[in-house]
Image (cartoon, rainbow, N blue to C red; front, side, top):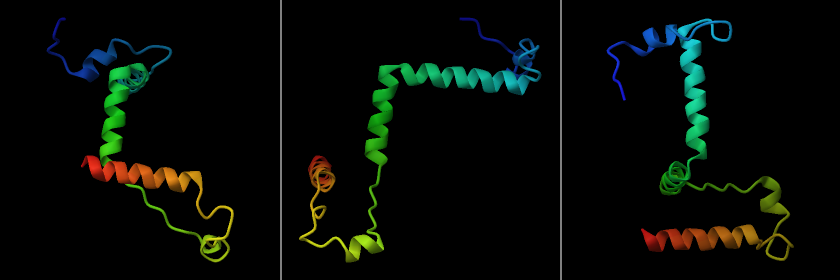
Length: 96
């Protein structure tokens, strides 16, 4: 791989034309291509998931309707989502 002594904007000037009128447009297109290619790479996706899981915060605020209409006798009092969140949070605390 050859290393260039020129700046990225100088290199991008070589690729301007009918599709990209400025060097900035060329660089933005190159960024978009890299994002698409990186999003397909399984290793990068796995690392991204790990990062999100380690930095994620779940915040739940009940709505007014949820506070007044849904009581412990309501059909949706304990749902699969609630059970899943409880299991996930307990598992996360024990692995920390």
